[in-house]
Image (cartoon, helix red, strand yellow):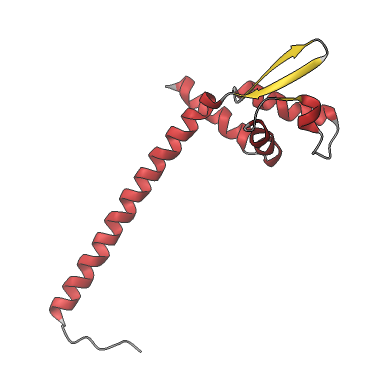
Length: 122
């Protein structure tokens, strides 16, 4: 359980930065070289590589080197724990919202039953 929690934390940390999210988005279209990935960003290559290393450590991105060219690819299954956690949170909040809606409807029905000719408030 602790390992899963650490993995989830790593994935969310990796995705917390807009540059890293943009890298993930670009890799969603297919593997790319580091130089091709870095081109759209106005930062030095060492700074870009720091972002890439965060993504690699989290397991979201995998790189391999062929000769002098380093190619990056997305590891979609690494996002599964985050997807699962978000789905659980969504289910929890949707259930709470439904309970709140039922509660409000019940209150409204009770008020209507007590005072069928309700005057509008001013």
